[in-house]
Image 1 (cartoon, rainbow, N blue to C red):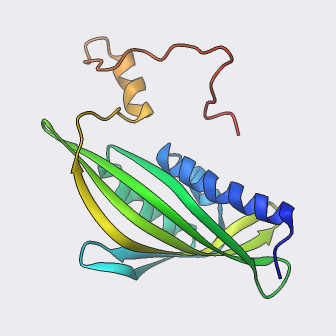
Image 2 (cartoon, rainbow, N blue to C red):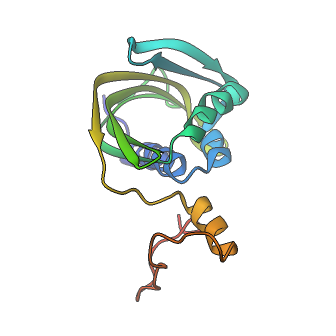
Length: 186
């Protein structure tokens, strides 16, 4: 049996909203994509690539997300999605394949830690729509690459713009016609 098309589309939106919110460092928005009692299971790389650490509820997930503060920028590229119905109409399963870049800057050195990963998900339909109820992250492979340059996170860019003495390493973003998509755009 397959999920109805509207449910599949809503789950795909949920998964992509998660990736977008993590990359934009909108962690409060990420938390809203989980149920109140969700469980997030994470590996302990590089020694353990399978999920071995458990974070319960939104507070536990917030703690897990805090580790991203040390990363200059992330980029989650979702490269595969499979959804299946669960035990009832308000429960579904998903397997999401992703390539996640984690750029860090230390002095003149920029490293790109690349995780080839999958999320094994459980979803629940709530009054607010589909939400992630369980997510287990498994890393299939890890690469480390040098990078030439990385754009700072937008919050860092705004802080630098507020301080005229701050070094500005990128040209200011120009308005596009038609306008590009911004955080306020779904």
